[in-house]
Image (tube, rainbow, N blue to C red):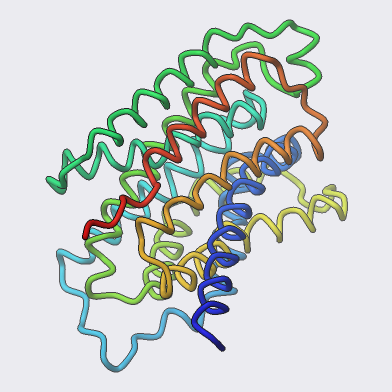
Length: 305
């Protein structure tokens, strides 16, 4: 395969990865309407864990995990898997998939701020401009006051602001996940990190999952919900991670970050096309600001001579 084809393949992997993330954020809305949140999260980690059993094996050339790395793995799972899933699932149940997509578009900007705070990385002026775009987009979204009929059409609750706030909590968890992941990938393979944090997530959610399972009969779920559950579990735990890591092998991280724009785009498209959600003028304006922030935060810098 030529170098050009390798790069095109990498671009396709990165774009498909973020598209999958955006689609399962949107498609989790009908899932939380049919399955209790804790049970849904438990089943997601369980299905994903079964698919990744071979990834738990330690490669021969990988060092043993010390106590510090175990703590980082726990925090990675607690923040990036456990709390992220709870905030995201409860959040999308209270707001629209379009609004969730706008909020999720702030992930690159929040990651930049966290990297500056905790990793002492230098942040360029355009990154701060991206943060300002994300803040303005979310403020504009908060200023949108859809009618009761519009909320009912979108399947949102009477308090969409709380749903948006919970989704932003998921954004903070995802940013912490990215910062901690930078430390983990120095010594542990991406596949094994994914499998280990999924295992931690399954352990953390198991008590709540069992509690919910005892009060819910999964036999009543229709076949389409089961199919959607399997897709959600594999997309969230396996496919999106594998595609992202495969693409980054051939593309610089700064350039790969541009493809995070596909996350809010796919979430909004799924919300509008598949879930038949309305798209208001304010939401569209907030969406445009959020995308501008994503592009500013992730566009690779110009090469110097």
